[in-house]
Length: 231
Image 1 (cartoon, helix red, strand yellow):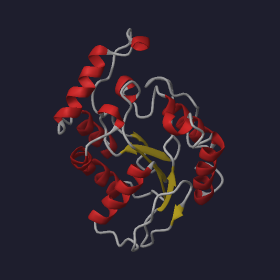
Image 2 (cartoon, helix red, strand yellow):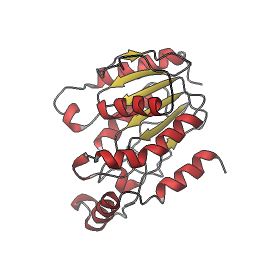
Image 3 (tube, helix red, strand yellow):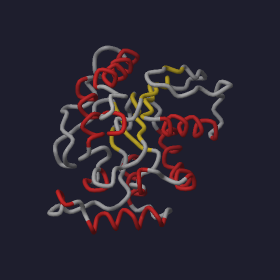
């Protein structure tokens, strides 16, 4: 069994955060009216992608009625619609589909993970919950040896990635880079290039803070850094 499958199995069965475990189960039991006929996943949501990927995308957390419902990261919610369309246009996914775990989506040269793997109430995980889940990200960063570009979706993902590198002993620049949309950071010492983007949440997309053109430009930059043609 590949290490990604073993890690995802541990993630799925993780019960480190009682508040999040209870919330995910409660949402799965009560359901949203439009999804009342569906079976909810209601557990930690595993990462998605290839062990030899050169692009690593880091999000915040599964949505209560998105990943927590479908069992696949960024699937079944508006953020996923934006993300998978952008990945498809940039050649990192075979299709822009985002509705179901069994819809045939295949990532190309890309791996998607999150700061935490359980849906948090109000989309706001507690600091201690982020810390408890951080071991999974730290392991992924150690094992994803082919990654050349890291794309952090949102300030929390950006800062948590840097903190995880620092805790692992990486010689990061001082002061640490600051988050700003479409900023590029060469961290040095053989580390991947870091790109920051606003998260494609409704808070950003519905207000125009993040447009599709802006989001596409971020992935175009990642594609350019890796080479124009999909691997």
